[in-house]
Image (cartoon, rainbow, N blue to C red; front, side, top):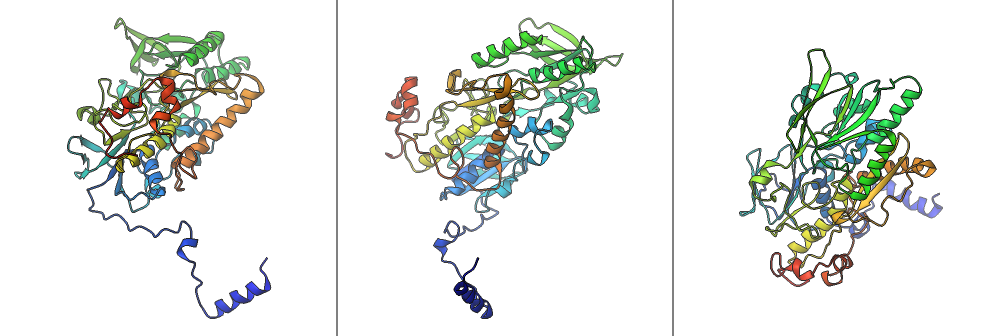
Length: 490
């Protein structure tokens, strides 16, 4: 309600056609708007390469009002959010929640957005990048977060079979488009007889820790058998070239125990190399034993496949990766072991961990803080403890979770939710909504300082006082000596 005196002032102001101006400091943020980045700029302070993670860290740095000339190089304009994939694919979450905001909506125009292109060549010794559109960028600091090359082309016949009608029950777990997610609505459902093959590729891969749906599928199958919709011989099988379901030993033991209880066949050491239809129209998967090289053809009625992931070849060719193809960063500072002005996070980094989007969220503030310290010539004191999170789907309405740190050390809240009963039923919806909310904050157009607090930046102890380093027995001097003394004292 407006007072009489204020109404009188407003009426007088309106009648005179006078605009009431607000002091700059009292307006939102109070800062003067920065001019747009010229289109011909190729010399930058900080360049980010990747998708969701690259756009997010650029947005967060802008919110910090850093004085850097920045650019983000992104192959797509927007991305399927990893935490939304499962919920949207099976109708637990509205499909409008599936994609991130566009890169251009997240990043203000005073930084460069180079969208629809990739880096064709990294030249770390010259601090240069060559793009697929022919442009060449230079940088003082480089942040790499491109994830993996994740494609169904790595399994012979899968691109063709994945385009058959969805009632053919061949589903490929990829985060490439809304169309793929929409087609995967029936993954794990309508399995009427024979075998349902769940396939996870060789570690490391995109979707680690979040793609184990065998227990979820089994709950549907058990229900369908009771109702007479599926034959008694229908069963669920889990195939992988790895020797475990999860690299986290605790989670692996729990998952194997559940598979044994429910009669799910677990086939370790078998790599899927081909899928096809035989002359009788049967769907056939060809597996190769990773130890003996033996080939085995297996017929199936349904299959849900996470295709293999490979390092991006341009990173390997540039010598930025280690012998396994993963970016060679220090696990604590996420700074490159050989190139001090390169940082990396997300799936592409080396280390004994489970690669999830939640892990990338935990790494992002460390990289942001350390990039700023590097640009200021200060000692890097942001330390990543390896935190990662994995949902553990028990049925169509029950879930728990696993959480661990570097080297698969259980986190304090690891497996804190019982696997059955009311708590597990409550957590199924709770984790889906909370993880989606986290990703929306990370990938929307709203400007924040980023995780973990959004409204303000975290602070970090100096290396001598970092409790995690003390617990791990890591000497602060060993981190300082990687690239010699810092440019300046903090």
